[in-house]
Length: 302
Image 1 (cartoon, rainbow, N blue to C red):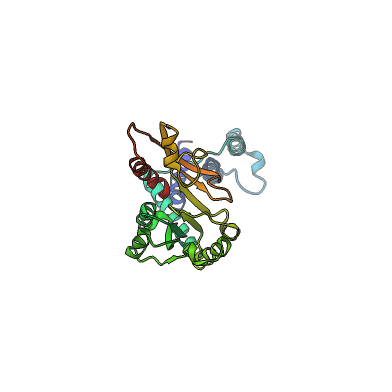
Image 2 (image 1 turned 30 degrees about the horizontal axis):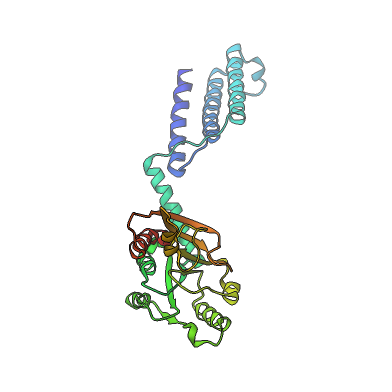
């Protein structure tokens, strides 16, 4: 019996090492099945050897097997039944991986994901940024896009007039265009011209970063649902072009910035994010505007 147990342990260790070398994740069911297989196989082999040595194996001789032989056979049958039952009814949690195995698995998954992305032509999302003024939000977006992991790149900058935002576009070697409202006979024709100019760059997202013109039907028909805007107030309070002035005139103690989806209304789209900015005693239009710009810049990049 000691010999049986010893050989069973050796067999289990040998098979276990082989499996561990080729598998990074072993279920409890697989472990039980492996152990049962090792025990039963080794025990059967030893049983046959013992029976052969005692003369109990051969034509017509098993019928005269002694009580000890029958006891060993019965023990093996019970062992097989118990192992099968355990394999069927016990839950099957996964064996925890060691640090090196976890790292290996993460590297394999990452490599597979990279290959899949390369096959699918996965590229950074294309942004067209529209601006009318100082370009503080545009600059923040341009800086963020320098990080290859950011997942987006500015493919063009548009404006309705000459402004500092165009200088940032040139600095970062990003194409730019200007579509002045005064150059068109109607608002609708200007809106169509803006739509055509943006469409040339096939954006995944249009970002209005201080763009002081309302887009119209043509633009929303083409880019509705993928155009966002920032506003220097906590919408729905103080919509429109004079949000900071209106907040100060109203005696507001808190203002802020809002990031939202553009729709056909005036600053009425679904809100994406907001950040609060306290209104300090003695605040002027300029001082509050600058603090709101400083607060909204991270929101524009997140």
